[in-house]
Length: 223
Image 1 (cartoon, rainbow, N blue to C red):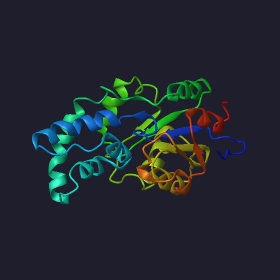
Image 2 (image 1 turned 45 degrees about the vertical axis):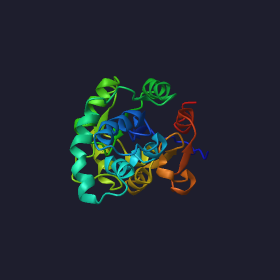
Image 3 (image 1 turned 180 degrees about the horizontal axis):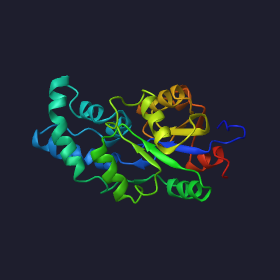
Image 4 (image 1 turned 60 degrees about the vertical axis):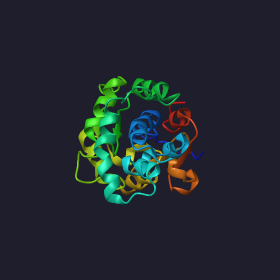
């Protein structure tokens, strides 16, 4: 892992699914009743998990690979309704992430969330995990008219929390996180524990790769 030279970043923005929290089991479970109703073959959990960071449409495409875009979109409301009823049934912070957040907070560094997940799903999930009052800022996928990889959600989060982009770290698990962060002027970290969509982390152009949350603490100068 390549570490930054001092001065270290003074704030952190996290992607949500696949970076801060492991939500794949609940998202997979939200698909199952739909597949059972239609008597469809259930895809392997690993297939769905891999594309979680790419959004609901990507997960539905895995489950219905032979369907066109209109048919996939038509299933979205039922899928989202199912998922809204089980947001934190199995979803938890990734191992080591709570310790990292505690260290970030103890150091007086603000942290926040920038996700492409909708506000209606993001806020209850964070509340259910006891994170909503700890985050300095939360920007969801429908907060603005654009989502990552557009840099504006990242810049909007910086403005809301009073963060300096060049002094802020963006941690994510998807190519769109890296693209958004770099375009916004932040330093970026890609995490190997995330969903990654089949991509090689080394090929995503991030400034550093983290194998464990402890690596992020080291990047922040907290180790």
